[in-house]
Length: 449
Image (cartoon, rainbow, N blue to C red; front, side, top):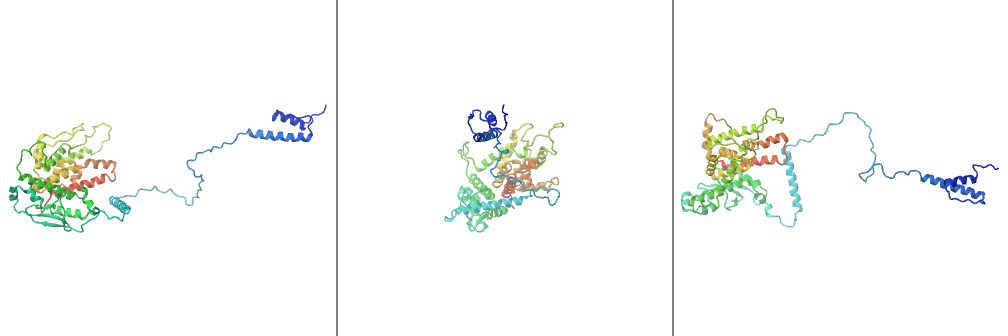
């Protein structure tokens, strides 16, 4: 029996046939070189088959990139000087003046940009120009020396609309040679001779304007608007006094006068007066609520007591002013009917300038008590009351001015902003606007004898 060699072509073909190509058929007459070629082919097939069974590497990336730029490794620099880390940056301290200057610069840049965008070939709008160069004050003599004669003639409206101001004359504000006029009556706006400070302030107000368009905005000309309002009331009061009341004017549906409109508008502020709206009492002992000393209610009562005492003793004697909010209620309670009648009669008896100043102060501070206290402190007709109080040894109060009135009206806002902070461009703007309105009311009612 011949020995079977493991490395012979026939044996290798048999092994490969069983592992790689089971369907392979080999002829018995095949020559030896063809057998060796067949073995090489089978080995190649075996290698290819074994390599195809290996697990293929995953083509999915191990991390998900959120940007299309290729990632690059950082190159750390060597530490050349050891030491503590730098301190955290602190915000720059900005003052009120710096914020105002920054806003002015921004507004100027916006204005220049708007001018550049406009068509330069077209002429500029006349409202954007200032046609006057100088502002001056002229003293105008009274046109009619005897006002009683005109009253009997019952033609006051004609004379007032043609320039009559007062028997002894008045101030007139001039823009070069053009007088500042009342926007309602279109006549030169007269300022009484006793109100020289108001005339100077109105002239300065017009001198600060840069265009006619600014003069049409009431918030830029508060003194001119309050003087025009008082002039309209003076004209209407003089015309109404010269005419006999008719049944038609007494009808309920008849149109009311400016004085009646002002009184009916200001009287409801007495029931919801800011000075008399106090916060709820402090929580009792043992309550987990955070107690603040002094509380908001304590500060409000402390600010309201001297104002209420002044009004109930010197201006409205015997009047009872109750807090607007009862304990545990959010709805204001109405003042007694006697109090409302006395206050209404007092407002109806004010002269035109004082009533208009009271209207400006009450609408700005939302407090009739603070407005009345401010008018009584600076009004011309209350000079005797002030002199009598200051002559007494028990009177030790300082003068009630703009700052005192603003603090009394905005006490709750100041208390809240002191605890939680102030909102820029909101609280600071309201604060300055409130003081501006009180200042215009003082200039309207004050005067020199």
